Image 1 (tube, rainbow, N blue to C red):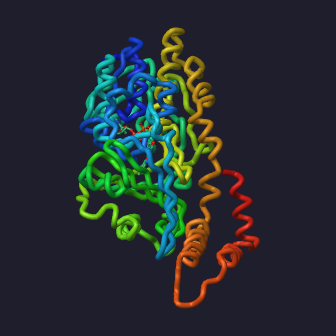
Image 2 (image 1 turned 180 degrees about the vertical axis):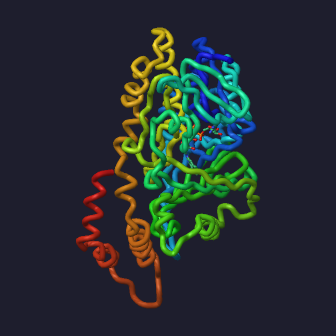
Image 3 (image 1 turned 45 degrees about the vertical axis):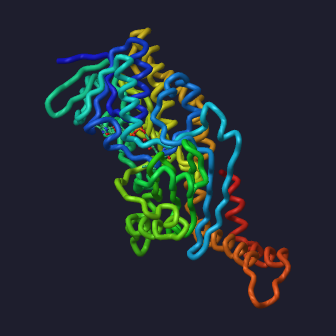
Length: 428
Ligand SMILES: Cc1cc2nc3c(=O)[nH]c(=O)nc-3n(C[C@H](O)[C@H](O)[C@H](O)COP(=O)(O)OP(=O)(O)OC[C@H]3O[C@@H](n4cnc5c(N)ncnc54)[C@H](O)[C@@H]3O)c2cc1C
């Protein structure tokens, strides 16, 4: 039977970052990816926060296939017939090295797979792992339909529903409370139109997040990211909320309605939809994370539950990359000590928990619970939009003082249930 030092299951950002670090240090690494190529089956909104990643992997990004560097932030609150947008532009976000970039996974993951290959990892696409090899509770390798490969360590980097972490007994089956469903479209549009519509220069990008009535009272929101010659448009909604919603509302219908909103329709007008995808996102925070290490195995990225929907940012790729690097470092330490037991690999868990990505996850762990409140998506955006509508409207009748309009509109929120919502906000 074939034997290598490390098998990485899954050629996404987490697995490939681990492979880069391991191969660079001279370890023998095999990455197996079930897709036709890395990125072929992967879905993301598309914004990669680079600062956390550069802290552990500083030198890789010079020739990365970033679509645009994000310099403009927009946050849009949607009520049924109106919306309120905040636009934020800061010199700091325009600085170098870049703060964040948009990516398309088909190109980004392939590029990262090439980097891993250049460093000496063997990346095999079209290879689906069907089972683990185990001996006395220890993970000793992988099995596919027609081959078995033994390894000192298996890296579970197979994404949110990680079948291999489940097989190794590191986590139970997923609870829908801890998952969100993301649906996404890529819409082709010319470079010039993108730059004109979002007020951007060449290479500059914008990120627009939407929340409010578009999710029919459910925790979640919309995103619109600018790529070089396309837009990534989508919705992320709590899976449990979707299952419980009465009457049932298909995500596709919400997406149709979102796309048809004038605030969105004007931005995507004339664009050609070229890709439609859907995927789960782990959103359970630290409480829903699996055990990260066992004898002969470490778990990274989405498989480890490392994603964060903070309402104003959606993250996962940076966490995947960071966890891959930290896992690789722990494997190298275990290799030096020739101890691939859970104890030998334990430094992965320690360094991950000390990292900013884990700490951010812990800081914002109550976001899903606090934001699972229909009032936040229905009543509050409605009140904010009403306030602006009344202030901006000039009719035939005389206007009242702005302070009076503000007090009357916002005053509606001075009731116990709204003040209770405000109190709960302290948790996030
Ligand atoms: C709609 C949506 C929007 C998002 N927006 C953002 C965003 O803007 N910014 C951000 O940072 N994050 C975002 N995320 C989260 C981000 O995409 C993930 O956190 C990230 O992709 C996780 O990387 P990963 O390498 O852990 O897993 P994945 O990218 O899922 O990679 C896992 C890989 O394993 C392979 N695989 C699975 N099973 C097997 C098997 N049995 N054998 C072999 N290979 C296997 C898969 O084909 C895949 O290539 C979003 C996610 C979604 C769904």
